[in-house]
Image 1 (cartoon, rainbow, N blue to C red):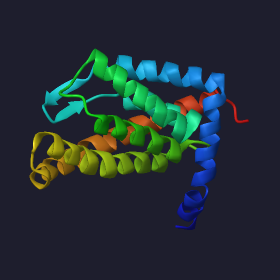
Image 2 (spheres, rainbow, N blue to C red; image 1 turned 30 degrees about the vertical axis):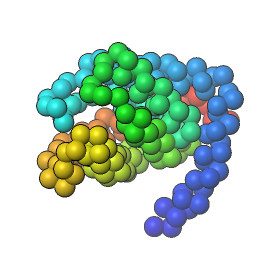
Image 3 (cartoon, helix red, strand yellow; image 1 turned 60 degrees about the horizontal axis):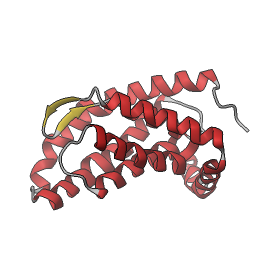
Length: 189
């Protein structure tokens, strides 16, 4: 618990360091390449139903969070969302969904930036995305946009996220981030 509180206290410094990455050309180019990879991977999204699709486009975004922090990754995820929508529109455009993409990148950056990559961190990152984005903001936005009821949509979302998406995505995120971190592509300053 004390380690969690320590990380929360260090969050403003982490955000500030990540914001400085916006002035680093190497960080911007690296983020752009990872976001481009995310857009390409998104083209291979498997649509199972109108409310359930599988995509691995979150993996480059998690790597960007690890390398460049919450601010750069959040901004990169905004760009990725806009480009993804231009190439593969899925329903109507909503700035609210773009905001959820920013939050997803921000979460990845907060959990992974300047931190040792562990399975627990990957589980926590996916848990935060699952709770705040997949189970709260997304159904709320859909409810506002289309008038679909919020509460009845939660049970299937909870089952899908807890038993399928969370464990698989956490595992994949851990494997990919651990592999990239072991390559030391961007050495610590």
